[in-house]
Length: 206
Image (tube, rainbow, N blue to C red; front, side, top):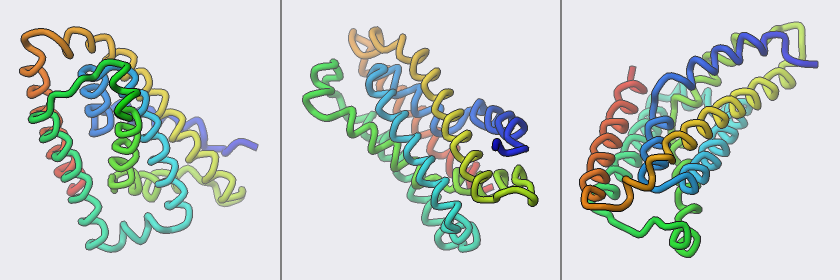
């Protein structure tokens, strides 16, 4: 039996995921600069990260992070610092991003791990499950079943939107990765990624 509040929950998730944020910005920059393969690998990592956060929330671990300022601050600072490190790497690094090099150097796996870490260190994801998901659970039904269905729905909608972002942003990969302006474009991406990291910190702090 489907959760009674599933339709309204899907609408909320859609609106939240369509609002620009760290995942959307990072995926767009990554897919445009390194191609769809990297973007899809990152999307898989993000999806797994969200699923783990959902499971942790169900077990009450996210509630602990929400109630402890120390843990919450550590997560916020770690997530922002990680994004800033990615921005610095994009600023100073120039590597081959052809499909063969991606396969040979394990770059796809690296992007997968980064997508996973960004979401495991994102307290906003945990707060969503704490503050928004419980509102869509009715008391006269199975709480465990409703929680599982709503969590799966959230991860599915988020992943679908991320795939669309990768498909559109990946179109720009060809002219951004080669040519006389490639380095300038890469550094432009680094600046934007740093801005996203700062946005992530400020928005989470609120």
